[in-house]
Image (cartoon, rainbow, N blue to C red; front, side):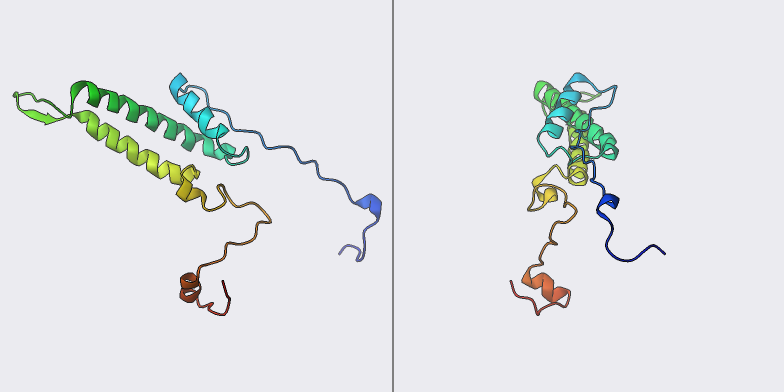
Amino acid sequence: MGKRGKKPAGALRALDIKPAERVQPPKGMSARDRKLFQAIVAGLPADHFLPQDVPMLRDYCQAAGRSQDAQTAIIKLGLLIPGAKGSLKANPAIAIRTAAAGVMAQLAVKLRICPSARGAGGSRPRVGDAPRVLSTPGRRMFGDESQED
């Protein structure tokens, strides 16, 4: 066991805190996807994304690109296109756009880039932040009715 009591002044040291660095787009992204990646990162606090978020953010940007490409095809060709036997069928770009929108919606929540996922504070909770207070129904649900709003 270590010594008890107050530490001598020389034993304390200052922490070297560096400002957070923004994540960078990975290699191999198209120029359009890279531009979106950089815009999303620049639009949030520097420490919002961690290095492990980069693959998901890349996938989000690529899904956004697929969605734009599919929308362009829908505008150009229309919602219905001629099938093999001449009958009309739904443009396959509709399914591509729908799938891309689903991927974007899921990743937006995981990456906390949609307002509902960021919560009231606008970003992930920080160390030392006060805990969020539950509403009255939440307090009743979890058995803590004694606290007041």
